[in-house]
Length: 495
Image 1: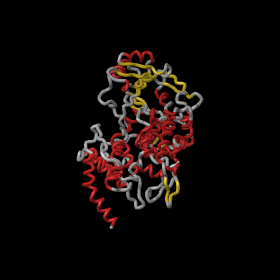
Image 2: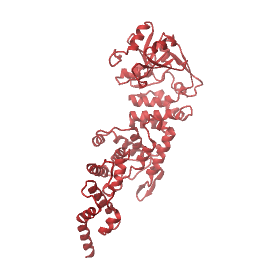
Image 3: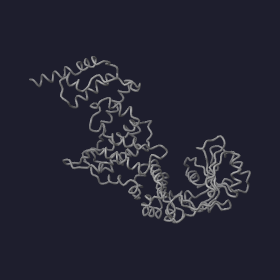
Image 4: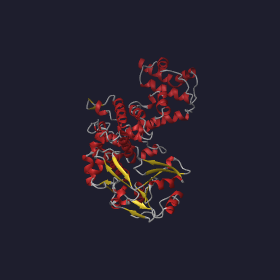
């Protein structure tokens, strides 16, 4: 693999051009993930630099002429540098070469003795890093790759391998166990045999108090975002899922009634629901929708309560109340991993709400549901659109005994919601209800049942479409559309 000569979108920034001119004998290197992604042709803006041959004091003085500088620890020799005219979001790391030695192999990512030395060869700096594909540098002066650990050959083989002995690398920092899975998923790489074997043996250490829960949760979510299906499989077979979210594993082997779920057990169904989010059918139904990590978690865990509520029912199984139990389990997992700390992308209450409501139209056709409830659930609630997407995924992943999809109620709901939107919903002034179920039963002489909900639904739609505006008009609507039919049924019963 050869590095492109132009690593910047246009030309090197002014501060970097000046640095190369001011210190002609200094080594200036692009390092880490940016080099890896550059060689793979992957987009990246993760610019990290190492400057060799210039003291920390001299380098800091130079950088202050070109922007804001923050020194990260006296011994670390790392500057957070924000060039003039840019925001802190655009800050880059500029460091001196450094060595790291684990303090007792505790697994804590902070438990290192870090010493910077501007005279240290760049190869020694690279050899302290986690994986070979992250242990390369690009010499900005000589335009060449420096690769002391075999990262180029591993890139070519699409292989993830630790620098040196896997056990030592993982004992130094337990977060590397999770980073290995994330990189494998993000890059589509296979984890090298010894690295993988050691990872599986040491998976239990991701529970160590030396590994902050926020960090474990962040790595978990980044992995899931990159490729959800591959992430689920790797987290499972590595043993990491058993440590982070053991509740999810109870879905394995939890049988379902084949008449409704011929696709397999709860695990198979839930995995298929995640697959649905990236299917052609989903893109056709939701062409402008992105798939949030909240939705991915909800699809994966929407039935996580089933193993805890399973009972025999005739020739099959029932899972009464599993949506409520699942919502509580999801909340527990999210709190345990502190997922809400992940860049504000995770709201535990929203994911729990999605799981709690994923059956809202499964057993009741939408025309038998109060339009007010449909409005509040799908059009007013902030997660209403995600709930509709989750319901699609759930029903898409539910295969009847003949292999057909159980998705009719979803499409009927879409049509009902379309009618409500056409009626001008969204003005913020929801008209009051004109008739109640008791009114309909009294006027038409009907007994309680699904028929009442269907009629209520039609009256509400007529009101939203401004075909009727008052209670008297609603009564006329009943008489015109249902009165004669009801009388005919009464005469037939009398005869």
